[in-house]
Length: 375
Image (cartoon, rainbow, N blue to C red; front, side, top):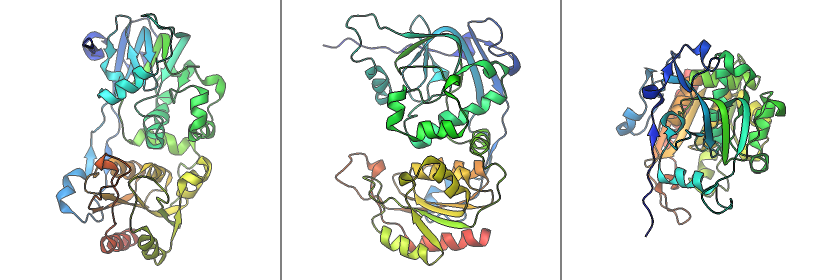
C-alpha cells in the first residue's frame, strides 16, 4: 500500500512582505513580493464566430485577466523545469505554479528518477541572484514563448534583475537541443550564454530567486517584449496571406485541408508549415503577413509578430474552444475570427481535445471576407 502524499502550499502574500517593485530583491528579506499595475488586455470583438453558443469564450473590451506580481525568496529551491519554488521546510510557494494537476507534478517528480537511492537528493547551487522565468510546459512552443521568454519584460521594470542570472526554459542544454526553437529564440533575443544560470532541470538551491507570479497566456507586456526582442516592433502590417498547414500533424488534423487550401488560394493565400522553418524564418514570415488562417495549435503563436491591424482566423472544434489565440490577437492589435467545427474522434490519441475536424468552408469564406473588409 502506498503512503499518502500531501502537498503543502505557502501563499507568499500571506506570509511575505509587500514592497515597491523598485526595491524587490535589493534588500534582505526572506519572502517579498510586489504587485504591479499592468495595462489591460484589450480583446477585439470577433469578426465572425459561426457558433454563437461560444460567444462567452470571446468577450471583447478591456479584461484584467492577469494580475501582475513579482516575487522574491531567499535560501530556497527551484524544483523541476516548470519553475516550482520550494522552501527549506518543503512548502511550495503557490505563486510559483500555474497548474497543480497530477500530471504536471508527476512530470516534475519524475526528473528525480535515476538520482541516488535513499532520502537524500543531490542538488546544484546558485550563489548570485537568479531570475526564473520558466513555467508550466515550457517545452511547448506556445508556452515557451508566451509564458517563459515573454516574462523577460520584467528585466526593464525591476532593477534587481539587471544583474540576475536567467533561467528561461528550465531545461539543461542537452534537453534544449532536442527543441531547437528554445536556443534559437533566446539567441535571436540577444541572450548570451554568460547571462544564463546553469541548471540540470532537477533541483537548484538559490540564495536569492526572483520569479513572476506564474500565469499562462499572452499579455500586452509579453507581446511588446517579444516583438522588440525579435526586431519587429513598430513594423507596419505586411501584405502576405498565410494558411498555417497542419500537414502530417498526428493530432487535430483538418480532415478537409485540401478543400481549405483550395478555397484560400482563391483569396491569395499561401500554405506554409511553420514547423519546417527556422525560428528566424517564422518570425519574418508572420511579420510580413496581413491575414493568417490556421487550426488551433502552437504555430498560431507566431501571430504575435504580425503588424497591428492584421487579422487572425482560428479553426478549431467544439471540444477545444478556448481564448488562447483571441488573447494573442488582442495583445498584438489584430482582428480575430473563430470557425468552430464538430470534433471527430481518432485512434491516435485518447484525449478528445486533440480530435480531428473538418472546417466549415462557408464560414471560413465569410471570415476571410470580413477580415479583408476590416483591413
